Length: 374
Image (cartoon, rainbow, N blue to C red; front, side):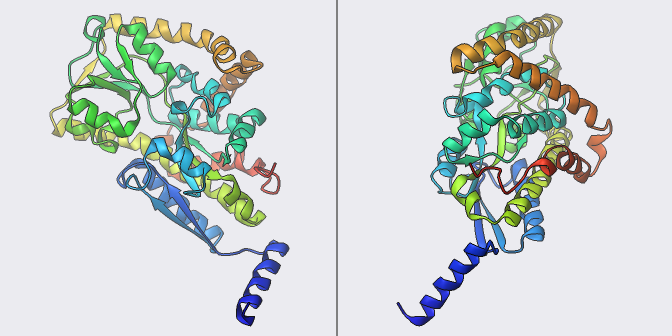
């Protein structure tokens, strides 16, 4: 070995042994288009991390690199250092996480559900362990706004919805669709546009923000509101490869955690703002907005109440989750806690208000020396 290379190797070894920071590039697999809401949050995360750890550089790789269904394996195998993982589409990989995800019908506020989900997973040792086993370190969840029906045909009554093929992003909405008499179709967000444009799908159960996030504004003709379907809070926005996490210093891990609070808050705030923007876009495209008929609303409410009571039993039966009833009760308590924590005027506030709450209630209590190091 040449002297210059030997000196460099020895210097690097000394730096690592002492815990000194080493410059590092972090690649995020977003799995979505560069115009997606999540990208705004990744940009905020990258900026915040650069301020806190100048030696860490973040680069986001959009849909053309990995799609959403590939990011789980991409993070696990180290193809990317971090990624956007949709736990509901890989239930066998993260069975513990499915319990709170399946309590979707509890949700009415995306801000509260994101906080409750993040706190639940961050303090659920079984949840964290199953992620570590798959080479993932969990860092943050976000939640979208309320779910509505975005369709190519008018769907407002139980007669309208009968037999319609509707995309469902997770088990709660599959059960909802089936109970309403529809046919639930489980496909990834990346596939919705093509399926609807080709007539293989009549509609999708998604937030209104997906009109522009997924380009559905070009195929959707009708939006139906007011059939209560809860919120989608199974979006693990910043899962990190375990080996990458362990290669960071304590100070760098602290910076990543604090920056995750900012990135997730920006995304959650953006999702709510997107609702307004997307309704304006829908008007431009002459998309008709309807209110669900009383029969559809009543059946939807009845389903939500009955479904919440079945989630714990299903978790034990389908995923072998121990103490499922107690875990479900704990998540309900967290939802109630976070609904009280979120200010009434949060939608008009700066994202810093939300990130400060996330930081105070969750991230400040995490020890970077031990978290994810088991």
